[in-house]
Amino acid sequence: MSTAVGVSPAIADPARDRGGRIAIRSVATFLAIPVVFGLIWETTKAAFGLDERTLPHLWTIANHLFASNTQGEANGLFLLRAACTTAGEALAGFGVAACAGFGLGVCIVYMPRFGRAVMPLIVGSQVVPMLALAPPLLVWLGTGLQTKALVAGYIAFFPVVVFTVRGLALSSPPLMALMRSYAATKKQTFFKVRLPTAVPALFTGLRTAAALAVVGAIVAELPLGSNVGVGRVIFDAAQYYVFDPAALWASTLAAFLLGVTFYIGVGAIEWIVRRRLYPAR
Amino acid sequence: MTQAVEQTAPAVDIPMVIELRDVRKAFDAGSSRTVALQDVTFDVGRREFISFLGPSGCGKSTLLSLIAGLAGDFDGTIRVNGRTPAEARLGREYGMVFQEPALLEWRRVRENVLLPLEVMGMGTTQDRRRVADEMLALVGLRGFERHYPWQLSGGMQQRVSIARALVFEPQLLLMDEPFGALDEILRDRMDLELLRISEASETTVLFVTHSIAEAVFLSHRVLVMSGRPGTLVADVEIDLGSHRTTATREDPRFHQLVTEVRRSLHAGHESRES
Image 1: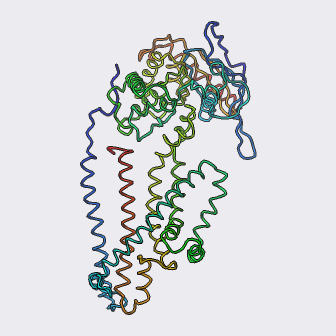
Image 2: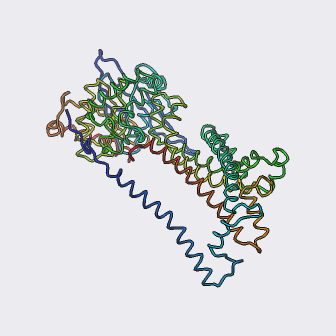
Image 3: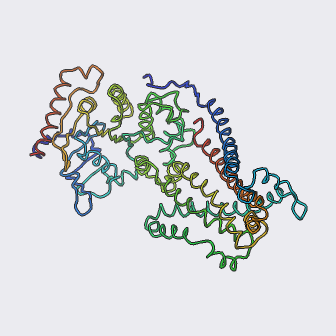
């Protein structure tokens, strides 16, 4: 009948095999950055003649990880167990943040009057210092996982709300008009247009929330006393920094790696979801 | 002003699909009210192809949105198949095409065409697929069912959105500058395709454009509008016959009509200026 204009059906997709090479380069860059950082660290130490207390050698920190503590356990293993405890708290907190943040974001979008009223309060909630909330929380909920998960969730829900609201508002006006012209229900418009459109923004919020959940869990461990998590270890090591600076730096490293792991974890989920939504892209 | 409107008397046996009487639409702009449309009165018969032509901002898109029941309150009367625009919208009596294709980029071409059928809960999954593929064949996209929108050119994407507008077999097609973003060569081709599609699907078409030649080439009647507040200044009957081809554009009558429409467009514009 008519010949179609433009791309032929048998379109080759060079993006497919280019994807593999890009991935390898990304990983290489990702690994190169710590190496450069280590070089700067050691160069600074050498150039300014800093002593071990001001800035220990990287290998002093590494040695600390392999040395045994008073219980006869390697410090590295001890830190790993602490990190797992904190990870559990942070994961629970992230779950709370994702659900509450998304739910609140949807309510704000669908109930504009409620949204305008609640948004300043949400921003205000982020200004309250955790130190002020810890004592009552401790009295209400005890020192267990639930308390720390709540604190982590409280700190992490904010970006989820902001990016849910932003993402749901991104749907193009003609598409929304189109759905109205079909007399589509709110539910249909939400699931067929608004939510899929919001996915990229949503994950930006979730990635930020993942890092914040770790911060929240660590901060919650400081005043709330606890089973030994990374926060607790940092707190203790800070007391003895003058005698054993490597211990503090090692526990700081553990907290850092925990944050990175969370971020990458959410990134992986995003990658899977996006590949299902936009295959071959 | 209103005297300039040439009312063509509709043949008695043609049922009216659309009737507008003294339609007026005003928007609140802060403290003042802007009148977008005023004294708009016309009828459209079944299977007529009508173009709205006018300068940017003359309210032709607003007029289409009003008929679609998407633009809220207005004064006057609008009847679509004898019903109010809101009722017609709820009754899913028209398909709509915008200047941008507005496709769901995470769906394949076929799934994009299926969207209205899914929303309206029409047919079984297999029926829907068959109907969608038939419609894609009608707009010349056989073989592209499993492509994603980003793999298609702008013209092809717009064909997908036309297929999507027609897939639930509405009797009325509302098109808001559908080919405005395409280059002239492609636009000419799409115009030919559109004539073929509207004949094959037996739909009434309301078409908004600001291209005089396009309006004349496609339409049975061109409704010329002037801006601020938008109103009809001429209703030009296009007697180029029902079968139009590329040769139609070289017909002397075509050029006469283009000139006639251009004059009424400018006349409307100048009377506004003075």
